Image (cartoon, rainbow, N blue to C red; front, side, top):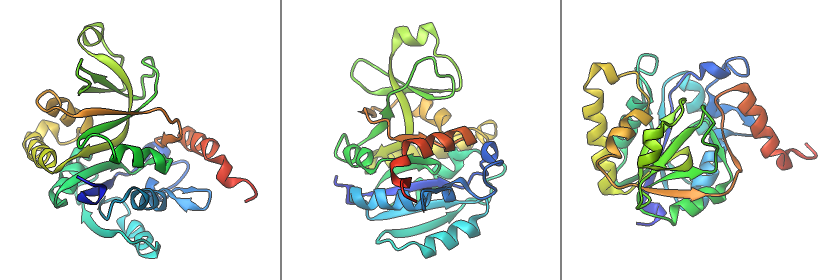
Length: 254
């Protein structure tokens, strides 16, 4: 499959409460040296050869819709409403996006900023893969990716330490950046798995890491490691400051 056979899915429905002191708007509209995260996603997708995108929106979605209208892009954009963004986790947004995608899909956390070459390299890699970057095993906040001997991701662990038993079974590969690539067959399997996962009321508030931990035990999804550190997941004001530092070269003279 080429990049044109994949649809980009942007999970942009959340409220971003941890960064409320920096912005009251959806995080995907955060400005970084004159371009919003949304614009940067669009530019990276186009550069990688992706032709279509599904944006799952909820919180202050009017602002995102207006921003999309104002951006000059060749992408074929579909907007999907998540009317339950306040009462359900982002697994629900992922499921909505997967259901709206016609073939392969690349799922993106909306609050991620990254150098476009990272995505370009990922799109030329395995047909189904989780994009992983360098990280410390001791970083509680990062979403740690654990792989088996064949290099398949079997677990993602978020906001807790990896146990000794888990490290005896798997190898720490780095941090899952928030980019998940699935070919057409794997996308269909994941959409079905998400529907079954969400059918359990107790799972409704859980995020995609929990769904993946069930799915990855059954399906072989590669680990695509990229050594570049030019990316940041912006959860907090401190993360936003870090993003401004990493991409400061763009701001010189402005």
